[in-house]
Every structure is written in C-alpha cells, then in structure tokens.
Image 1: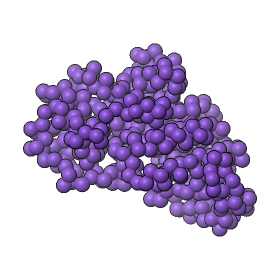
Image 2: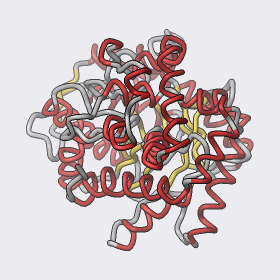
Image 3: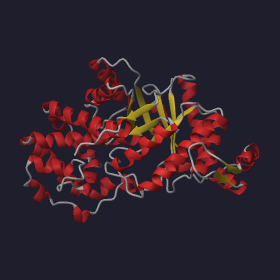
Image 4: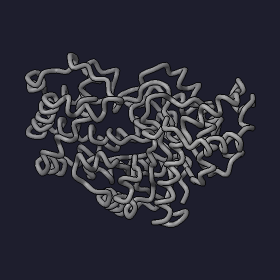
Length: 420
C-alpha cells in the first residue's frame, strides 16, 4: 500500500463534508494533479466530539461512493500510541505514530552504544544534493541525537509491530510523528532519526518533524520564512540521502502537520518540492469546521445566530478550550470582540472576520483561532448544530470545496493564487 506523491489529510470534525472535500481533490485530479485524500481524526478529537474511528471510515466510504471516486483513499488513525491504537486498527489503513512524548527519555545504554557503533560512519562532512553547504556531523552529535531520539523511535517500532501483527504486513501506511514537542529537529538529527527508523524496520512513508517557527492552528506561519525554507530544503535532501543509504521506502516524504492556512510557506514549499522532485503530505484538519461556521454565518437568520452563540460560549470557556491546544495557538484575549459586539454583526461581518483573508480589514486571527478550538461547543449543541449543517448543506459544501482547492491545493501544488 503506497501513498501517491502528494497526499492531504482532510480531517472533518463532524463527518459531514466528505463529498465536498473529495470534490476539491477530484478537481485537482482533472487538472492533472493526483492527490491521495486521507481522512484523519485524532483520539483527542473523537473524545471531545463523541465519535469513534469507524465513523471516519464510514464518512470516507460514503464520500467515495457518492462522488464515484476511483482512486485510492485512506483513513488515518491520527496521533496514536500503544494506549489507544487498538481502537483504530479495524477501521484505519493509515497510522500516525505519535512518539513526541518519548523524545528525551533515556535509551538503554547497550542499545545506544550499539546504534552509535553501527552508524559511526554518519559522522563527518558530506555533500547533499541540492544543498549548497555540506552537512557536517561530529561523532558526539550522532551520540547526542541518538540519546535524545532513539527511545522514541523504538516506541514507534513497538507500535508499528503491534499494528502489523493485527493487520498484516503491507496493508497500511505508516507515518512517524515528532512534531508535538518542544524543539525542532535539525537536519542532522533527522538523519539519525531515519537511521533509527530503518533499524526498527518501520516502513515509514511519511515523517513529521517539528519545523522551526510556530504552526498555530488555522492561521498563517509565525516565524522567518527564509529560515523555514532553508530547513525544509535540507530535510528534503536528508530524506533523499537516507532512502538511498538505508532500507527505507523510496516514497518516504515529509509531512507538515497543522499545515492548513500556512499561506506564506506554500510558495517556498512548492519550489523546494519541484527542485527535489519530492512528495509531500499536508494535514489540514480543522479548516473544514471553520468553513462550516462561515457557511452558517453566510446563511443568516437562525444559522447566523447559532454561529454567534458558539462564539459567545467559546469566549466564556476560553481557558478550558485553550488548554489542550496551548502549544499551537496564540490568542490575545484583548483582541477578541465582545459577545455583545458580535451580536450586532450581520452575516458578512461575521464571515469576513472569521475567513482567513489577510487582505480583508475585518479578518481577526485571534477570533479565528478561538473558534478553531471551539468545536467542542458545537458537539455539545449536538442535533441543533447537525440540523443546521443539513439545512445549509449547499452553501457549506461550496465553502469547503473552494477553500481546500483554491486556498490550499492550488497555491501549494499548482502555483495558482490563493483567494482573497
């Protein structure tokens, strides 16, 4: 089971926008750009909303049938570990092995010495194709990186073998995720990590490192774009080197988590992928839920009132909602409008404030981030919210498809301009 060169994680909090998402992928395919759709949902999201992994599989299958999609598609058990992977084994064929919490845990000294001895030749200066400066790693740096990451990769190996025992070899896609940690991995650390992944026999098709800068939920990149671009290119070069040197899948590619709406990075990423003829996996999970809210606001009437109500409750419960996402949001409470002010807004004002269009004077990144993490409130509202989605299906579906295609797929892969 092999991913296409390009793939996208198209998470859907409430499982209603599968056909709309798939239509965006089909539009790209019709223009000569094949992308594998990957419906992803984490254990955390299932817990907050009250869904189960089989719901995601059902949505994907129904969308594929409704759209008559004949290509591959995947259901991702997103950010799982040994404690919860069994919940996903039957319904998933893509597993994101999240071992960020194990980074820094001391490995067995015997294992560490064996790894350093086996990979002593990683030390030294070596040119990397497509990168101006050679990568220079000392023996001490190899040992330091192994001490920091070896235990985490071994944990990924345990999770992988557990899934393999249940599903069989070659029946699912594996991603190793290390993005939800404190420090970004350097390209030389990535090389050590890939060597360890190879030693563990993990057939990883995607690797999700933590990049420099901040990847806040639903808004643009925060950091120095030129620094990210340099690191991204070096990581691509390291992957190209590692797949030739180690028994790793040739289709191994970078995965960018919280990748939705990182508009300032899409150009540099696209150019780097072209130079290295490399693939990419991009996760865009939370954007769909925000497009639902924009659609409800645009519909006006009771649907607009519902969107306003969700915001008002989110503001009251700010600390509760923000706590699980503290590392991936930057919200200034003083920049958030009061519920009374929002209560006076018309449809256009609410939609313009929420939609990620930096050229629009009404756009408010703090408002958008708060609503991004407020899906728990919509889940608690339950049938009223789902009924509103059904009642305004056409306008919401149009928003979802247009956002995914025009603001993400086209500028990232096809050099077309984003909307706005």
